Amino acid sequence: MTRRVAILISGGGSNMVRLVESMTGDHPARPVLVLSNDPEAGGLGRAEAMGVAAAAVDHRPFGKDRAAFEARLVERLEAVQPDILCLAGFMRILTPDFIARYKGRMLNIHPSLLPKYRGLNTHARALAAGDAEHGCTVHEVTADLDDGPILGQARVPVLPGDDAESLAARVLAQEHRLYPAVLRRFAAGERTRIDLV
Image (cartoon, rainbow, N blue to C red; front, side, top):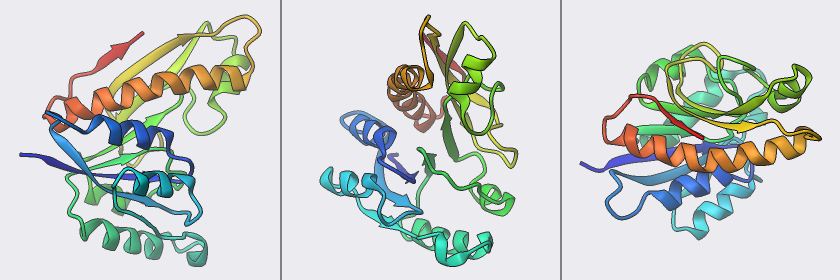
């Protein structure tokens, strides 16, 4: 059975592009929707250019009413009946109710070797700590921020002279490898962790 995948983005969607590109041939999943909280997100046009339905629910008119915003997200999602949700640079914190609705079906990619550096500014924080390596993590989404079972990690060395931008670029290249690899396995029912170097 082919799994239906919805991808949530907030920006340019480079990870979304890699996920969509990977879901061909004998892949056990197919993309059915790219959804953003920003109608101006560059990834929406990129999705449409690849033949994937794209939509936006602008979070700004909802102010602090996250439940109302999420109710609109759910409307959009349920119209396409996704089996799996992939957060790919979706920059809104989701409520426990939303997360519970999609429990066991929602993945996120985070630019650090979790449990290190939950939240933002992960590259600068790794540099400030003097870490010898950095990387990215794909995990199942739970109600705790950047937590949940780890499904895969990819590591990069921190090089002399690295700044946050150079380190981020190398980590992003690994994200583009890791997320499609984890999604393929997850869609096939495989939840054991993988590690890329």
